[in-house]
Amino acid sequence: MTTIGVTFDSTGLTLAGNLYLPGAPVAGPRPAIVVGHPGSGVKEQAAGGYARRLAEQGFVTLAFDAAYQGESAGEPRGLEDPAQRTEDIRAAVSYLAGRPEVDPGRIGVLGICASGGYALAAAATDHRIRAVAGVSAVDIARQFRYGADGVQDPAVLQQLLDAAATADVPSFPLFPETADQARALGPHGYEGWEYYCTPRGAHPRSARTLTWSSIARIAAFDAFHAVNLIAPRPILLIAGRAAVTSWMSVTAFQRAAGPKELHWIDGATHVDLYDKDPHVTAAVAKLTEFFGTSLATADGLETAA
Image: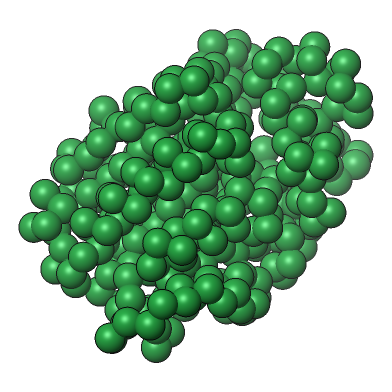
């Protein structure tokens, strides 16, 4: 397998990505998969891990940093803009479609965490995306409105919007400083801190703050609004049985109109599916089966259905 650092344009911003090319030669162009990273993540973390493992299965894969994040361009740094994030996925599809190794009629998208929601939003209106999958998929707007577990008081978002309107600093921290403070947030809060703030998954370019200007953009977004438009193209959602965020995968699945599957990984939490085995191995096996079928041919709709 070969890994190549690449750049491409997204609405005038230069995005940085890693392109993974399978090692075994084949006759003709290959199917390809765009892989999007979680909110605050970068291409070298969970997205890169999935992209590498799927390339080992014969797909050309592209993991990239969203605009304003990682090695990609855009100011202010750390901005989470759902509309831009959705455009970034479309731009990644355009980049892959122009690669000589890629069959432009066989491109899929995989989104992890927040990118799972963005992938669904992009696929709803971009028919070049022939199949879409999410791992621990969330709609970032629902997470801010209702919390990761879906039971947060809606007043919390209103308070955030008030704070954003009057903030005298550009950003606020996403994670507490210590393990004890993280444990006080509960298991989901702690596992996020452990992944992003310890040697387990920490990366120097991964954002540990969020700009206050992100809040209004997030609040008005709905990743699942047009998910029914994806039909008849297939959808796969992979969620951990122990993930507090799994209700969002259920919501997206219920709204989808065409070929769809909600696949459960027993014993896995939300963040377990970023990097922990045997959970990631099980997810990759399911993704390989899904994309192998749905991207088998350029007219793979009949195959997938």
